[in-house]
Image (cartoon, rainbow, N blue to C red):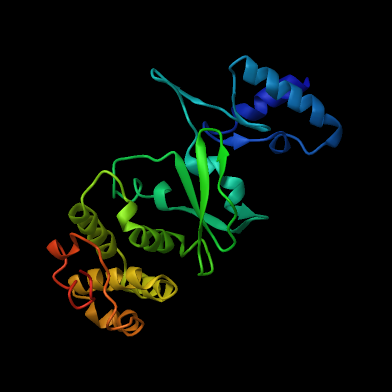
Length: 241
């Protein structure tokens, strides 16, 4: 089989929007140059799209043009290393998916234990948020919630009242075990995040769970989050003004 036919058949089996490199198509060193040339020819012909140097994808075509790959695909090399999770989408990347805003950001934020300077990748700006907890596949959804609470003031195109109501719905959907894990993870977050999480859990009548959060805070420190008191009757107990 010709190398071009082999590549075309291999790409046909990939899902639309999946980002790949020559290494995903062959591990034979002597075929590397031929594969790269074939991929570039296919990109020039419009059969595949080129995301950046050495990265390609099979675009999903619509009447409005080609769809961009999902953000997770764009940065998947930054989320895993040798099959181990090392990062996760968070912050601006998740506000829309969590139902906190209708806006979709061109900034991809990644939570990692070890961060690096921001950089550009195609049309996206990729930046990093320091995560002090160990990152696992299981706790990523909870870390994403905590990160969103931490950066609540940066959620665009919505009111604090709407945001808070959405957070209450998200927290209500968690199991008792997940709530306990969320609180344990929150202890490594800034005090304002812990206070706001505690106030929301208290509002949900989960006061029996929030003692670790309450005890971790300085009783004389106040947290300025305008508009929260309209939704949370518990905000005063947590010194949120």
